[in-house]
Length: 310
Length: 286
Image (tube, rainbow over all chains, first blue to last red; front, side):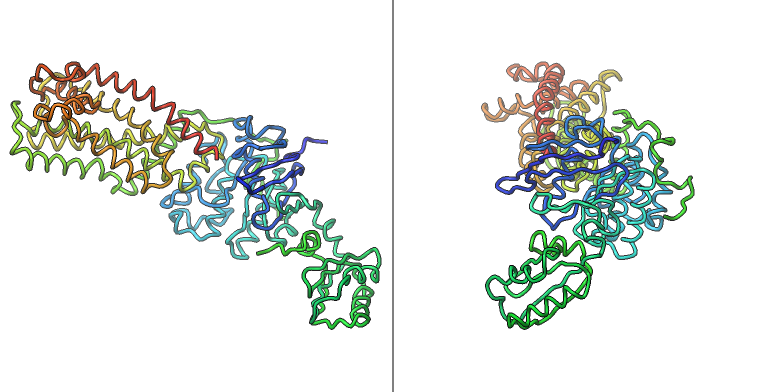
């Protein structure tokens, strides 16, 4: 069993009164794409910055490629690539020059012209940074993270501000570097990104790990269905419990607010039938009843009772 | 997975021919960053205004506006005497250049970007310092040329002339640390400009730079003559033969200006450099 690429145990980080990371433990396997998924403010960036050695853990331990990112920083930095969330370039610098500059600070950089070409930046190599689109700035950021031939790259919100075409190109690129044996750790609050790309997903919320697994594990491989039930009047007391006993142990019921519930259960007609029968029996008038395949969004909702995006 | 030509692979499989990844040397890193900073000057020549138009304007204003009413007892008069003072002021302002550049880098996340790279953290400061020294040196050249046009001449030998320039550059080196300290402490370029202007301007005027200290009120004269800028100015004037005999009761540093200037450079660097590095590290440690 090779040593994990990242091993975090009991990490705690606090800014003033705000607890950004609260006893987080997680592992990233080598050669995988691992997504750290969570809403804004969940502690994703802080966790990543601790792995990159920008911050010292206040409690707990962090090991990246077996090294302490803070104390053994100079040994670690040549082996990792970091894509910052924003900034990190002069406003007047031309895209290609910026990449060449970063390349010059590495011992064995990749060919920057090839990298620019692959990232679709060849046309804007002479464009000043401030005039690049958001997506182009992101791709340049990714190029800067990859130019030093890292074994492990940390990418913070890699596709923020990109159009769908650029997002797909970036995803393909990340899949390609995984095929080359590079470990990728990315943060995102887009479920589709995590679902499409990641081998492993860690869902974090309020600084804690609330679920881990492959996309199929987390969504039961599409074998489960979700039903969103919205009703015209508030539910009677004890509604979730009564519905749960009606559905049996295979289903989960989460009350989202006084007029809506999320039901996760086996993807067969039975669940839907049971829900509508229950409504009739309890004199509850559905306003809408939507059936769908369980997504990561639903997983997050049923774990926290809150929406992920936004 | 698409088929990718091996030559176009973005990274090598670790078990194949991944080169041993090492850090580049500090010198290479620093020069790389210096080069980058100099490209900025090339792109935005207006950045050089502080060492070109501004001091030239000072030379002309002082030489012709004040020059007519200040008489200095040397061969070529006030203009030649003035030039040493303005050169001292210009190198003192090199702290400005460092501070503004560093604050801008901090603000724009450049320093954070550099900290994600396998480089020595000192390379950022060394690169910034070298490019700022070169920036100031351009000012010395421009002012020497302006001086030659208005009648300033060096009346001594090559060695003494060179020592004069060396002291100016050495002074610029000490000022770099003040710049790093201010740049790491301030949160915005505007703040740096405000604070540096409010401090460096009076310091460079409260000296023998533009007017002789001889006729100042006694208390002010003491302050001005002990001002390190005065030692530098006096040293440069002596080394270039633009000085006039000091009054017998001139302050001690002015009696031995070259030695005093070297001491000031060493002392300022010894005190400010560790402080500046500590402030910079604290600022970037977040």
